[in-house]
Length: 372
Image (cartoon, rainbow, N blue to C red; front, top):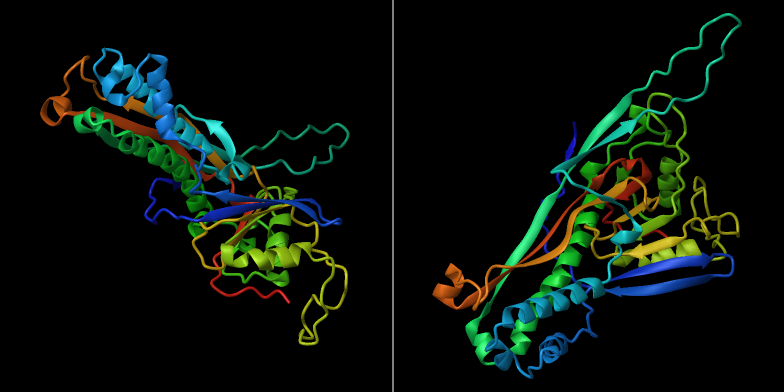
C-alpha cells in the first residue's frame, strides 16, 4: 500500500503574495483578481484585544490585572483571541483546491475502486453475470501533529510589555494557517505523488507529470492527459474537466496572455509542424476558470492543472488549539517555579495527500514560457 506521509516539510516557509484570478466571463473578458497577502494582518491590533479583555473585568493595565485571581483566565482568553484572529485573517488558497474531510484516526486509508464499465449482453435463458468489483489501489494519508511552545515571563507581565506578549500568538496564528497552505502545496508540487501513465492504462497521452514548458502546446498536452484519464480495469473514461491552473509567479503574465487573449497571433516564425498560430480565435480562452498564482510551487516556472476539489484531500483531526501549562495563583508548575514563566502550546493536527492523482497534472519546468 502506498503511504503518503505529508509531514516532512523541509523547505523554508515561503513569504510573499499569492493571487487568485477568477474568470467570470471569458468572452467579455471580465474577471475578479484578488491578491492574497500571506504577510497581512494589518488590521489586527493585539494590544487592543488584550486591553479589551482586561477592561471587561475593570482593569486598565496588564500589571494591574496580574494582581488579581482572575488574571490567568484573562490572559489565556486574550491570547486565544489574538491567535485565532490572526489565524482567520491569514488568507490562503488551499481551500480552493482540496476537499475537506474530518478524521479521527492516526491515518486514513482511501480506496480507489475500479468502475464497472458497460453492461454486458445477456442472452435468452442465460444467467446474468455477477459484478466483479475490485480495488485499483489503496492510499494511506497519515495525520501529523504540528505545534510549538512559547512562554510569557513574569517580567513581561510586571512591566506591562503588551507588545511582546501579543507577538507570539499573532505570529503563531499566522504560522499555523500557513503550515496548512504549505503542506497542501508540498503534496501538489511533489512529482513523486503522480503515478499515472498511458503505459499503465490510465490515459491515452502519457505521464501526468513532466518538465513541460508552459505554452499552448504544453497546456494542450496537460489538458488532454487529464481529459483522457480512464479506469484501468474497465477502461471507462472518468470525464475529468480541468478548471484550475496554478502557476509560479514568473508565469502569471504568460498564463493571462494565453488564457485571456481573444485572438491568437499568427507569427511567421511558427514552424510547419506547430499546431497553433494558423487561426485567429483563441481556443484556450474560457478553457480555465480559475488561475492561482502561488510562490509555493517549487519550480521556478512550474505549473499544475487540475479539477478543484477532486483527488487532493485535507483531513482535519483537530483545529487550531491553544493550551496553558500553568498559571500563577492556580498551580506552580516547574517552569513557573524555576523560571517565572507561564507556558503555552499551539497545535494543529491534520493530514494532506492525494486520494487520486488522476485529476491533476504537474509540470516541474525550469524553462521560460513560450507564449507568442
